[in-house]
Length: 238
Image (tube, rainbow, N blue to C red; front, side, top):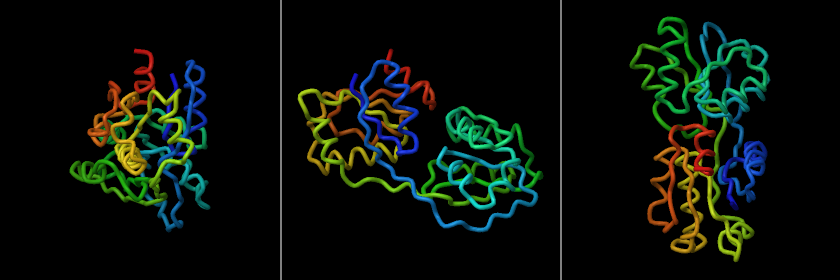
């Protein structure tokens, strides 16, 4: 199958390698561009854990000048991909949730104590789900530190428009977040492709990523059984 990968550039290579190994042809068009925010002071004292809801937050943290002071702090990752990235980049203790904010909330309540010190959320400028609010209801003290911004594309590159509409067009698009799906829909509208993508199936990490696609006239929208990359990729063989 010919597939469009929309992940940020930092995630394209590893995902494309898996898809090619599975016999697919990959076309890449990152729809979110990751830009680091200026470093702000972070107080290491008494922090009992770091919360990572994206691999981008982990990468941004590693690039801070004071990273060595933080690598020993336990990191609680939203899912397996983020956890693997944290381990590969040098975090010493990493715990893994089930792929969404609800499972990360549960993991925090299992591994941390409300009176054990602050939790620091390694966040982007836009967050999905109110992790801070959910944990504060349990009595935790959560500090959200904005480390990066995911800037959405406004249009598709010309070569991607051709790939979507050629004689051998893209047959599927992989969408890992609602924001990426919103960007995909907006780019389709900007290129006047609404109604011209009826040959494309959208493979979505969660139902929230499928919602912005309604009205595009896609062939099908399929949602992973759970919010993990493995579950999403399993849709390609089911």
